[in-house]
Length: 172
Image (cartoon, rainbow, N blue to C red):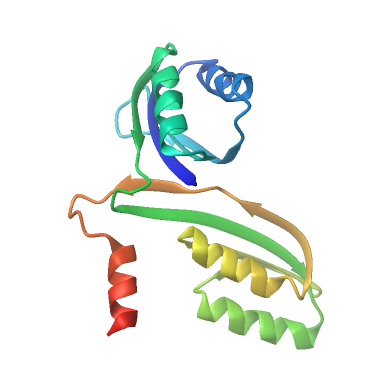
């Protein structure tokens, strides 16, 4: 099962290296990793997506706490969160394909951030499922490059789980 870990760390040299070393020593792969400054100066937030069962993730969390510079580790897998990714995709297109790609972009609320005679770069943000769907639809075109940030997330203070709302709306 994929787990999402939100980790607060002191923003110091080597902290990411120590975390990735811990994962490597335990033969864990990090499926997604996003790092950025947090709300407190000197603190960064890492959002990691890793595979493992609950027991394994619990052990990994304990090992993370043993590392220097780790402030807090939260497994937010089953917690209501707002999650987003950023996708940039460069496509080489002819004029017929361009209009089709622009229609797809409109549906996904993607923005054109660069346009040339034979290429286009789109920027899209949304939940990981939306990004995967957009990427899948664009595979029939000539994709030159793709960059995705990986998942970032914050827990919902409202405690409303949007996944539950999606399911209940479809069942009525």
